[in-house]
Image 1: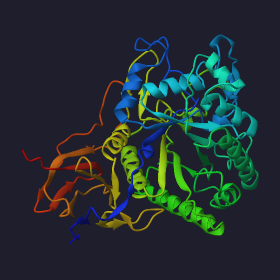
Image 2 (image 1 turned 30 degrees about the horizontal axis):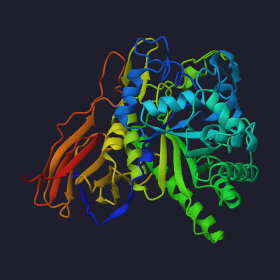
Image 3 (image 1 turned 135 degrees about the vertical axis):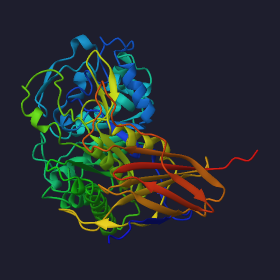
Image 4 (image 1 turned 90 degrees about the vertical axis):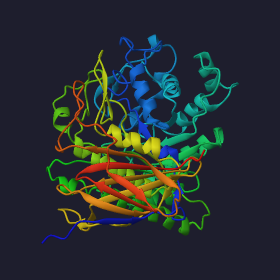
Length: 506
């Protein structure tokens, strides 16, 4: 007789990991495919505003409460001249965009993107080109964006119609410089030197900024984690964060193995954290380097299509993954993994935001819609603000092709002390069975269940289109709370958000 599945957990206010930095719910817009042109910007669209930005897209981004958006790349930034994207639009040059082999019109550049971000209620994480360029271009750009006035570049910004500085606080020192695919690819020692000297110059212009150094592009890189160690050994005093990038796919159609891949993400974070702390000890430094997981998502559906695209066109439909339900489950588990490392992961960017491997899709001159992955991202961003708690979880486990002892249940919990609210995020990865969960929440005396949201579908391959929303959350989750014991039924292959609220007394 098969053993009955059961999961147990203890959640206590005292078991705190860290305050969640809201920037872990960030995203990314690169000049790639239809992310900018046809995504956030489409001046001929019936719902475009006076600057040509699609208001329907802005509304969806605001619903997600995206706090920060990385820009303008990505691979694209490594051959990008920022000066091409400022000043009168009619005089901006069209360029060959080498990373994705398209034509960049430069209709949208730094100032316009800052305007868009303000409308979307997000900050900007700006990247500088350390592929074909370096110190000079970076110091000029930060003078243009952040210096008030009275110098060549700051006064040029004012001439361009932006009297006040943009005060961009977070800056990426290049992108994936460990990757041989990168224009201007560098060894760790070469990159560490240019990152250090560029960061030094930028902080002389504006000492208030924070800098993100490039780490490994993924855990399969042959130089991982030596690239991080060498880079930080050289640039430790100048930088504040190290970046992590990781995408997962299910090309082998093995859902049990696919849904376990956030364990690789967990290992990635632990390894980079340990590397940062080793260099901290080596330097006898008092400064702690934190992590910016500024590219993460599922990406594999569109690769075959993209190989067939003709080069040198404007805004072709590149990287337009159509996400299914199992993708949403893994995205949920990845968000849980980020929350469980809230003590060191202070920024993260789902890559990307619109059309390009994105939660939001648009039709040119048409409507916009939500992909399956939109929903776990939405729930985590909206309800995952506060203190990340350490769940003491006992879950049945399974083995898959690449992983052993995979918990069927993933869990994170966030306590909002001010609102007196507790949110528990849960994924049941079991492909066939529901799993009952018993949670000890006695430290949350006087709380009651406000909501139990569930995202589920009988078909793991179910996807949303502009015409049909097959995958969407409902609020009919089965849970009860009696005498400090929360009992919940976690349906097979489901994303669950259980929200507890302190009962209000009149």
